[in-house]
Structures are given as structure tokens and as C-alpha cells.
Length: 335
Length: 305
Image: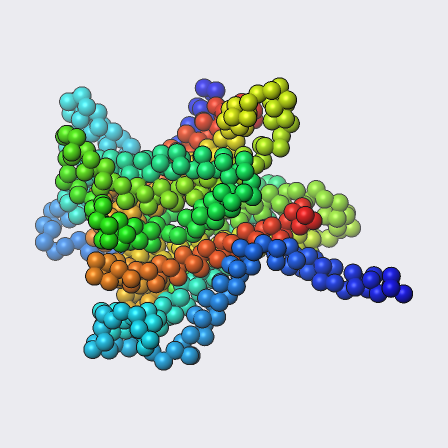
């Protein structure tokens, strides 16, 4: 098991390097001058420093190497300094945002928790709803519950988050006035009431993303259970006299979870993509909104860093899925 | 005598050809049939609409601005008095054309890569690693990046609308071929071991001939299913880009763009969000049902039942 995990980790590292190369190449292949839109108010010596930080005018591989060093060598040092009070990273060139003139990672660290909270919560909600639905509609295949369930998940699967977002705002914020339509970014949780307010303002964005997730996961759950229900081991378990709930919830569910876990992890990129849109609709100050702001402001270092962070999150969750997969299905480990 | 007639009936019944069988099975799936009808209905409305509908999508009539639905303007008018229905038709034209073109590009790419990876063992490993790499790219951020970086140079050389069209179709096509490639590769791997392919090779058919004559017709059904899902995916992606303001120019309506414009008036005119949103959702939903039915109809194991 340990060996398998290490092997998977070793594959993930080159993947990340190649992805960062792709992002870098897309940025450098762009035909316009990356510094063209920097405001004239920026003093020339600062501009020179920005050019130096990007390695402009030097060969492409030097630029790429500079970015890699800044991102994988200097930024971790900053993190170590932050935790242990050391000063390894003093006077070193960090990845500086052109918009805020501050290190990009500082802004990211302020914004990442919101994104992870909203995405994470919505995924937990989606899994909690979709697994029982999937199990029950497979168990009662072609019943009314199954047919309405299949139809509703198909609808949820087809409605994009940029429509469900405004739709739930119209219903729950404009007409019913149950929840706020935007996310108050300055809100602090320090007692029970403020916690309730926090829950309320997270409700709509989480709901929008959870609808998307539920639709996908429950479809896969249903078909995975259906595949397993006719297997011999199910008949054996029933013949042994096990109760129906144990057969379904222990034997069948465990085997059905194997493909579903992969789908849960592989769908995360989609959910992160949805998070960019949801953050835009509900004005959540996460990294998705930061990406859009950076794109509008032509803030290259921030765009590069954020795109890479999204890539990192995706690769990381794929890795988690692979390890979980091996944990659940011992056959995988000996490939 | 009667036996003979019966035989003839069986011979000429619609179920006797491959596509006849597929059609018979497809008809049984009510959702798929309804999906097909709705999708072609939307397609016809959008394609013929501009010739039948009296209002121009960009004709400004400031006196009749911000109207609700009426007989003259069934979907109402926007803040400049432009007729929403005609804008919906114009937007649908763009969205569906982008969807079809991007689907076609991603299908060609996916099929080529899948066939080559499945057929030539030497290239399999490299191409599949390449596919895996693309699958772990952050697609939406990357698409946004491409829109932002290449928008201006392309609009300079091809004009704002055409340049954007080329860019969006290209960007969506390049980032959505991976599922098709995987499915096609799997099917080609299985087909390569079949007797008729081995027979064709043993009489000395060149590889291109085998691929075109024997492999491609047999992987048509997964490609068709991917095609339907590809249209849905492309329409959603294009709308998402337009929704984030990085799609077509503002005066050029698409469904995503109209939705984006309507969100600004969410508090005052909530019904405006509905039209483009419903149009996107209904189109995608009908295509998904169509794809579902097509998958069942094209699968010979299910068809017998």
C-alpha cells in the first residue's frame, strides 16, 4: 500500500511540472506584450524589477525556470518563515501581483479558505444526498421514485450553475427573502448568532454547487448498485439469511463505492469550475473570483499562480482518489 | 401463400435494417424521443426565426424599454427597448453554431487520437499519458486565460465576431476531446483482435484502409453518443465564458451573454433571467436525453429487449 502511494506520488510530480509548463507556454505564446497594460503611474525602477522578476527578454526556459524557483523554492521558504519566525526568504524575489503590488500567495492564502469551504461543504452535502438516492432508486428500479429521481437528476445535470445561481437568488433572496443574495466577506464568526448568519450566507452558493454534484454522483451510484445487485455474492449473502439491509448497505454498498469514489474525485475539476462561476454570482471572495479579477486587470503573475493552484488541487484530489481506490479494492495495488 | 406474404412483411419491415432496428429501439425511449423533438424544434426556431420574426435583435426602441411580456413582444424588451425574443433567436443561433462546430472539432481530435492510440501499440502509452494530462488540466481557468490572451489579436485579424467565434470553437474543441479519445481507444483495442480485422490484415490491406473500412464504421455508435454529449458540453462552456464576460463582444447576443446582462436587472426584472437560462437548460436537457436514448438504441445488447 505504501509503495503504491509513493509510486502514485512520483507520477503526480512530473504531471504538475508539465501542467505548469503548459500554463506558462499559453501565457508566453500570447502575442501581446505582458507589460503593455501596466499603468504609466508605475515608476520605471519598479517596472524594471517586474521585468526582472518575469525574466523578460531572456530565453523562454530561463523565464520558466525563474517562475519554478519562485513558486517552489522561495514561496515555501516564506511559509516556513511564517510558521517558525526564521528569515530564509528575506530579499528574495517573490511572485508579486501587479494589481495589489503584494505577493500573490498572501492574497491567495486569504481567499483560499472561502473557496475550499464552499466547495467542500457542497461536496459533502452532495454526497450525503446522492448516495441514499442512488441506493434507493437502484434497489427499486423502474419504480416511481426511481423514474422521478432519474428525471430530476438529469435536469440537475443539465442546468448549468450560472442559471441555478440567479434562479435561487430570485426564489430565496428576492421573493422569499430567506437568505442573503450576496456573501458578506467581512462577516466574522464569534458567537452563535454570527455562526447562523454565516450558515445562511453560505447556503445558496453551497446549494448551487451541491445540485450539480448530486446529479452527477447519484447517477453513477445508481448504475454502480445496479451492476452489483445481480452478482453471485449478493445471492450468497441472501441465502446465508442475512437481512436485506445488511446485504444492501454492507455488501453491495461497499463494492459499489469503488467506481463512485473515482467519479467523486474526477468530478472535482468540474465543481471547481462551477465554483469560479458561483463565486462570481454570489460575490464570494474566493480564489475563483480572484482569478476573474486578475484576468480583467491583466495581472499575469496572479493568473499564472491561480491557474496552477487549480491544477494542483485537481491533481491532488486525483491522487487521493487513486489511493482510496487502492484501499477499497486490493486488486488495484498489484497491477 | 399467406406464409410467403408474412415472410415478405418481415423482410421489408422497418426492423430489418440496422438503422431500422436502432430507430425501433429509440422510439421506445419516450424521454429520448421527446428530447429529439424539442431539440430539433429549438434548432428550427433558431434557424428560421430571423426570417419570420419582424424585430431586429439590435434595433433600439428606447420608448418601449423594460416592458414585460406582451403580445407584441412575447418575451418583453430590455433596457434599450430591444425585443428579447429576437435577441434570444440570434443568441441561440450563435450558441448552437458554436456548440456544433466545437463538438465537431473535439470529435475529430478525439477520434484521431483514440484510433491512433488504439491501433498503433507504440504510440499508445504516449498518447494516453497525454490524454491523462489534459484531463487533469484546470479547464475553465485555462479557457478563460485563452479567451483573455488571444481575443485581441484574433479580432484584429478576423473581425471581432468571426475572430471570437474561431477562438471559442478552437478553445472548446481542444479542451474537450479527452473522453471521446478514451472511449474510442478502448473500442479500437477490442476490434483489433476481431477476426475480420485480422483477415483484412492477412490479405495485405494497408493500415489506413483497415482503419477507414473496418474500424471506423464499427466505432460509429460511441462516436455518435459522444457527439450529442459534446454539443451539450460545448453550449454550456460557451455560455459560461459569455456569462463571465469573456465570450463574444457585448453587442453580439448569445444565450450566456443575455443571461449575464439579465443578472444586472435581477432585482427589478427577475423574469429576464429565465428566458436565456431556460433556453440553455432545455437545449442541454433535450440533448442529454437524446444521447441517453441513442446510447441504448445503438447498443445491440440492450436492443433485443
